[in-house]
Length: 125
Image (cartoon, rainbow, N blue to C red; front, top):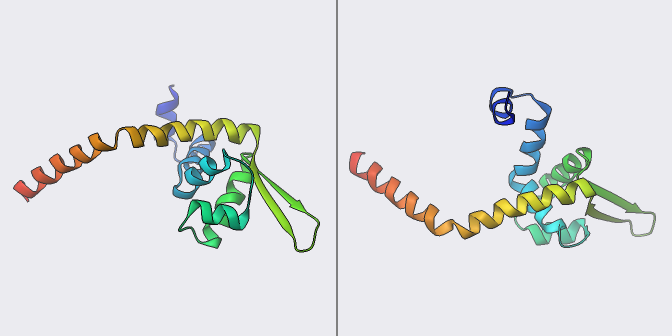
């Protein structure tokens, strides 16, 4: 069986869940941002933009559980926590960034396809 068949056919398959984590709205942006350097939570939140504290926390915990993000809590006052990519996370982030760059490169074609689709729907709708 091909991987693509497993991803499509098995909703609870472990690799499908990881794929969902990697390609979630905030997962993609966090991974791409962490490719640059380690970030503190508040820095990362600002860099990602428009993400709630709760969603960023959940995303980071999920990615940490999957072994993609490393959380480094330093015992200082005030507390300092830095987030960085693990080797596995860096590998995944490079792949996700490639997809993001592809979408950027192909956006004009996507917009044209949307316009054609909307025009057809408007004509029939």
